Structures are given as structure tokens and as C-alpha cells.
Length: 264
Length: 166
Image (tube, rainbow over the protein chains, first blue to last red):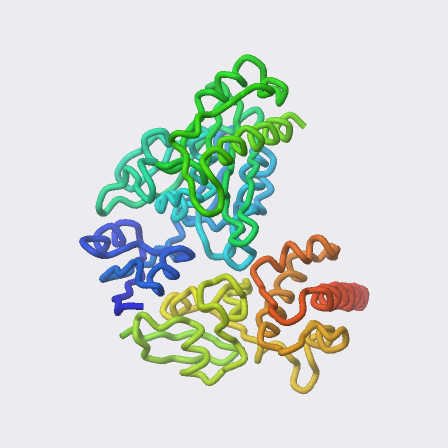
């Protein structure tokens, strides 16, 4: 790891002031610290926001769920009040990394990093979540740009995410057998805004919504509605783990499974 | 440099470390607690697992400065004097190790796992929970046996304590 200056921020305002130039925010650091160790990332400064209480916790009020950006995957996976209104998100969090990683990694870090194989971005898109920062509110549809890029500007910090709990939802992922990352992950949600299907692990530009599958499921929210469904492979990733065609096939299979799980 | 201050195995320690110092290097090189191992160094293998504020974490993937103010427990801190911790005893009894390199991490993960599953554990759950710990000697058969045995001993012990308390 290259030399770095560490700062612990006591508040979001202080963190925003420090997060300038080549500085980076760190919370759980489950992506950033390994990236710094391999010198893929070399920030001048690290601004630690993991001890800011205002960024933590899960609130459920009726159907409205708000999760602080500094809430760990473990806390999301084991929250009773979240499990009551949106068990699909608890389930997703329980499948990230391993127990030690879930104890440190945070939802804010995951979505701000926008790794093309991360789990949370698909949930945010499918749930039509709003990403709240220290400056504004951004719809998930506008938040995730391309691989590792979001709408966040310099000094802008994700403080929470909020969404309306869907009537039905589920997340299914097909893991790489070695890394356990999603080769394809699909989050399906049926809520007031209709059916939304978001796919992670597969898109050339990162997480995306599948118009084809959403259209098929809008008519009938049932796995049977996808019997002849197809998604185009043109904009999907091809790598040593899976070809674009195989990923296209997996997207339909994972969506079918997710719909079945959501209806169960 | 960062001035850090934390509790390690119940002892207050303060030190001045380079900001980029990883927690595992601080434990091993500054404090001489070499029971915590560096295996893969990429947060996959779990040889470096310690408890930070009561939760299992990979000490190769956090900075010592991030742990300042925290309560850290390492493999050296779990036995009660000369008496092995029940998880250590179960690994010994069931031969849950061969070369022993992964063992400190396995044991720290197991202690955390049992604490999170007071209702008890089954084999499938243990195997899933061990996802972040890799053994390259011989496989997981005896490790899983040891975890299940320790989970049973510890739930009996806590029930016994509860009875006494009542």
C-alpha cells in the first residue's frame, strides 16, 4: 500500500470538507482497503466515516424504509423490522461476501462504489429507491452510471437510502463458484410502480433494468410468463467466467427463480 | 503517523503507527501477537480473523487506525489461563487441523459463529458460515465436526449457567 493520511470524521459535514481532491471516503473498506493493498487505488487521504452515528440504523415507518449509509450488511441481514416489510433485501445482504465481510461492509459503500458485480445496486434499482446524500436526493435510476461510476460529485456523501416496501420481491444470484461474486444477480420487485427487474453482474455498463422481462411480468407476475422470454446478449459482459450468451440465459433463469420465490 | 489507542485482549495499548499500517501487522509486529496469521492477504482466506468490538473481522483488510478506540480480541486472548477455550478444545479433540495455519482464524470465526447462533448449529449452516475461511490441508470435515461439538458444549454450559442463575 502506498502511503496515505488517515482522518476520522466526527460528522458528515467534516467528512465532506475533508473529502477533496485525491482523498477517498472509507467506511467498512471491504473494497477500498484491498484495492489500496494491490495499489489499484492510491488515495492521498482516507476520510473514515464509519464512526458517524448519524449514518447508522434502519427505520421502518409503515411501508417506508430508510437505511443509513453506514449500516453494515450484517445489520441489514439481521434486522427484524426490515425482514417484516422487505425480506428480499435482508436475504440479499445475508449473501454478500462472508460473515467477517458483512460485519464491516456497508450499504452506502457498496452503492457508492457501484461494482458491476455488487448485489445492492440491483436492489436499489428494482425497489425504485432514492439515494439521499448530504446535498440532494437522487433516484436510483439516475444514480448508477457505468462501471464504478455514479452521479456522486466531489464532496458528496451518501447518507441513506430510502424506498417504499414492495408488495412482493426476491433476489436470486448465480455465484461464481470460486469468488462467490454474482455472475448474474436479479432483483425482482412488484410494487405500486409496477414490476421492476434489475440485473447485476452481467451488464457491460454495470447494473441495469431489463425492459423485456419487466414487460413480460407486467402482464402476469408468474414464472410461467417467462417461458419464452429472452434478453439480448449484445450489451452483456463476456469474460473467462461466462460468455454474454450464457449470461443472457442465466438472467432469464434467475428472474424465473426470483419471481417464484417472490410469489412463494 | 497516527496515534492509536485500543484494547487488545483486555490490555490497553497505545502506539504511534504509520497510517497505512494494517491491523494484522500492528498485532503481529508491534505487539508480537503472532497467533493471528496473514494467509492470502486479500481478505479471502480468513487466517487473520480477530474480533473487533465483539464481531469477527478480517484484520488484513482494516487499518490499525480504523481500530483505534476499539476492543480487539485475538486468538491469544480466548483461553482462560491454562484452560483452552471450548472451541480450542473441540478443535484439538476432533483433530480440526493439520498444519494449523488456518486454525487461529477458524477458531475466531467459530467463536463468533456460535455467539450468533445461540439456538444451535447444523452442518449446512456451519459450512455456509465458514465461507470466508479457507483450509488448504485436508478439507473441512473435522473442522465442521469440531465446530458442531463446540456449539453443543457451549450451549450446554450456558444452559447450566442459566439454571444456576435462576
